[in-house]
Image 1 (cartoon, rainbow over the protein chains, first blue to last red):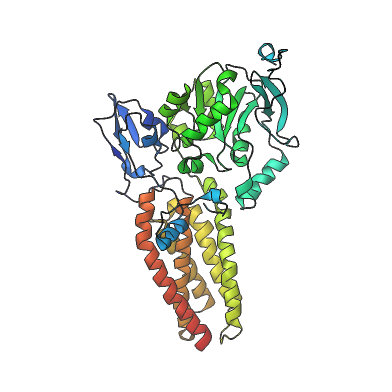
Image 2: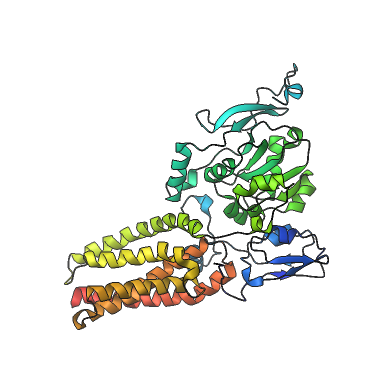
Amino acid sequence: MKHRYLKNVATLRLSAEKCIGCGRCAEVCPHGVFSVSEKKAQIKDKDRCMECGACAKNCPANAITVDSGVGCAAAVIMGWLTGSEPSCDCSSGEECC
Amino acid sequence: MSNEKSCCCSASSCCSTKSITPYDKNDKWVTVEIYTPKGSVPVVSTNLHFKDIFGAWKVRWGIGRMNYKISPGLYAVGKPDHTSPVLVSANYKLTFDVLRKELSGLDCWILILDTKGINVWCAAGKGTFGTYELVNRISKTGLSEIVSHRKLVLPQLGAPGVSAHEVTKQTGFSVVYGPVRAKDIKAFLDSDFKATEEMRTVKFTMWDRLVLTPIELVAAAKFSLVVFGILFLLNLFAARPFGLADFIAYTGAVITGTIITPLLLPVIPGKAFAWKGWLMGLIWTFGFIWYSGWFAPESLLLAIGYLLVLPSFSAYLAMNFTGSSTYTSFSGVIKEMKIAVPLIAISLIVGIVLLLINSIWV
C-alpha cells in the first residue's frame, strides 16, 4: 500500500527556464517526483515530495528550490517553546530521532 | 596482493607500514590488511558475527546508540585494485554492517565518511554526510593515488547532503548515486552502474516500521516513569487510588501510539499522523472503558477524563513518528502540528483535571 501525506504543502519549485535536462533530480529523488522528457524535467507528483532537498542540492543549474527541514515533532515543539529553529541534533549527545 | 609492484619499495618514503585507516585489532570484522601506494587498508569480512547482530539489536532499543561507530577512512572488501569501484558510506556501525554483508564475492573499496555515528540519510539531512566531508576524506585517504579511475558510488539517500557537481569540481571525481538499499548494490554494479526505478524508490514496509518502534517505546517508557512517580505520590492521599486497571489503560495508549499506529500506518484512515494515533487511541480507550464498566454513572468522570487524556497521548506519540517516517515533508509536519498540538494540549489538560478531581475529591 502506498503512503500518502498531506496534499498541497510541499514547497518544491522547478524553473523550466533554468532546467538543462540533465536528469540528476530524477536520479536522486527517493519518491520518483520528477520525470524528464525532451531535455526538460517535470514535477509529475508534487504531493509525494518529502522535502529532503536532494534535487535542489544536486541541480547544477540551480533550477530547483525546496525548503528542506529535519526534526521530530518533539524538536519542533521545543523550537516553538524556546523560539529557536527546530532542530534535532543527534550529534550533541541526547537521544533523538 | 595486486599492488605489490607499486608498494614495497626500498626508499624511506615507503608506504608499506603506514596505516590509512586506524582500527581496533580486536575487531573481528577486519580480517587482514591490503597494501596500497598510500599505506595499508583494513580488509573487512562480509559476514556478520554474533557481536554485530547483538550490537544492532542493542542500538534498535536505544542502548549506546549514539556511540556505535567505526573509524572514518578507507576499507577494502575482497582484493580490490586500482580499477575497483569505490562505495561511499557513513561511520554508523549499523549502516556499515548492512553494507558489508551485501558485498560478498566483490572486490571494492569502501570510503567511510565521519558522520558522527549517524546513518547516511539523517547525516545527509544534517550535512555531515556532505560535500565538505567527502572532499576532505578523499584527500585525507589519498584516494586519487589508490584508484586510477575517477568515479564514486554514493548511496542515493546521501544526496540531500552532497552536491555531486561540487564534488567533481573540487576533486575530479564524478559521483554516481547508487541504489537506496544495500542489497541492490551487486545488481547495480553488474548492470554497469544503472539503478532501476525500483532501486531508486524509498519504501516504508511494515518491517521497516517495526524495527523503528522499539526506540519510540523506550522514549515513551522513560517519560512514563515520571508519570508513574507522580501517580504514586498522588495515591498517598487519593480517595480513589490509581491501580492496575489505570496502568493497563495507560500502557495500552502508549503501545497504541508507539507500535500499533506505526505498524498499521497505511491502513488507518486519514493522512495526518496525529489523527491516526488519536483514532487508534480512541478505539483502545473506548474499548477498555467499556470492558471495565467505567461508563456507569458513578465513574463517568473517570471515563470522560480518560477519553480526553489517552487518545490525545496516543496522538502525540504517533505524531512523533513523522520524524522516523520516510515520506512526510517538513512543511506537512508543521501544518499538521499547528492544528494538532493545541488540540492535544487542551484535551490533555482538561482530561487531567477531570481525573484529578475524580481521584482526589470524589
